[in-house]
Length: 88
Image (cartoon, rainbow, N blue to C red; front, side, top):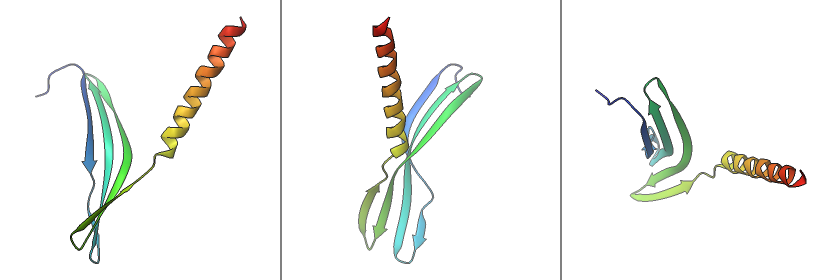
């Protein structure tokens, strides 16, 4: 039984491995999980694909272009707010 209240977890999670011939592909993602008594929020971000072939392991990073765009929009919004406050 879980305690009532706020729960916060941030972790790396491995997906289902996919084997194609001698290669095994393992997707990985970062998961932010916030839970409160009457609900919660889970946000997943793909982060990498691990390729295992003949005992050699390669990790291919997945750039999160959407998050970069979101931060750019937030930055522009803050800039316009500051410009608007300065003109008053």
